[in-house]
Length: 333
Image (cartoon, rainbow, N blue to C red):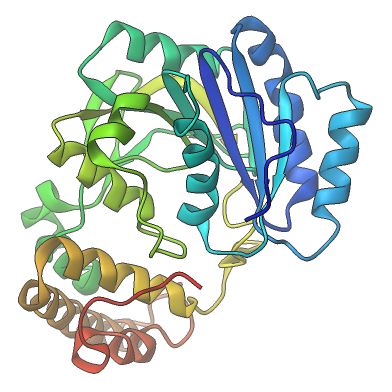
């Protein structure tokens, strides 16, 4: 990891943005933060570049200088791409190991643009609720369509539902479905999208950082579970609104067309289940998903239903299940 150039540890809030080959989106994200940084004294933004290997460092660095953002924004190049958790943890560790780390940290994706008051809404919520460890935003698309979404922790029953995709099964297992469609009301949830999460410093001190051995996917799910086990709550705060493009760095969804899921998605899923539930539980979850998805594909063919699944999903899932891959994988590069 490269050393941080002129790292300015903030008094109140550190905003962490991890770039990987999305310099234009990262610059737009920084631009959306200008008013909010000015409105919250003691805030600093650190952009880590996950060894993009393109012109990201040059473009982002030039924008910070050109736009006059250097008083509140720092560029932090990393010497390897160790994944999402690795890159963000590099920022967090540097700050936490300082003499006076800030009380709050905001995890913000580069393909986001914060709307007016979004950062302040999360900060105010955590300051009003000392037992809340994490607060997360609501999101909107580039077209302005709002989606109120948070999540339950994945389980044996959610894997069964995801595989079968049958109305009666989903109805019976409605309390276990991972995605939760929410309203405009604040509420406690299991976990939230890592695209905009504010974290209290004490959470890192009691629950630790994100697990570096996830390369991409499931790391925020695993982190929120660790936070809950440490006695903190996680809250959805819809008054904080963020535009999120999604999938820009990964290429999993390009122009609404799904590509084949990468190897690291399956490894992250397997790591989450084995780490948190054990090998036998994971084997049961894998078996239920495989059985349910196989029946779904038969029903899809017979009823001529549209195929919106990633290519080769069933075969890839089977080959990456615990039956072929065994137990806990190490997914960081």
